[in-house]
Amino acid sequence: MAIVRKNILGTLHGSVTDVIYRVRNGKLVAYSRPAKQKISKSKAAISARNKFALTVALAKEINNNSTLSMIWKQSKIKATNAYQKLIKYNSLLTDSDSLTLKNAITPDGTPLKGTDVVFSYDEIELTIDCSKIDTNLLKSDKLFCLVYLSDPKTTASNTKVKPVFKLQLFEFALSNLSKTTTLSFLIDIKDLNKPKYNNGIIYFAMTGELSGKYFHSVTGAVKFI
Image (cartoon, rainbow, N blue to C red):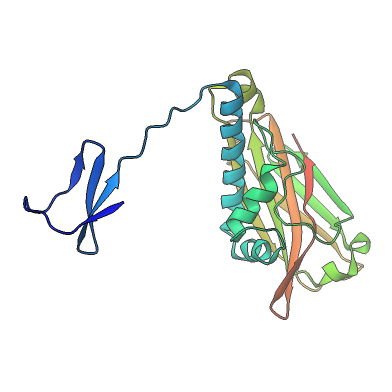
């Protein structure tokens, strides 16, 4: 980059050969034109791009929620912000054509037990038996469920096809939990599951806040299609 101090031809803008001129903060600045990069069409390169696209989509959906974003921000994963931490963590767990049961909506946390998932027609029912969960999680005030629908066979059979999928995060309020509580949640995915997908995973986690710090469970994951 260079700053042009004087210009006898008047104000320049645009490009001349390999130099691009722009006015920034009242100064005429010259940039070298970036070299054109050839995008690889190899199977490995396409798979890597598809994997990254899936990871980014997952990270965006989670990071758009203020609670989950703050939880990732407070995590000990080495990255500059919550979004980058999400990508760093989940990129190692994503396949080239699909998310997996190892992907997560929360970082490592308190184990989550006593859960059951049943899928019928266009509804997912998630049940949590609080008698089996850790006592610390009884202070949770939110339950998050992320539904992932995909068609990995289409992507796998043709590497030129971008991953075909849908993601949607659901949030439920929790209160007055005790060891005698049984929680049941119905998630309607009728509109989400159009057209019908052949692969579905639900991710879920419990979260809460005490004295300005968030706590959370590990992410549970169940393949329902």
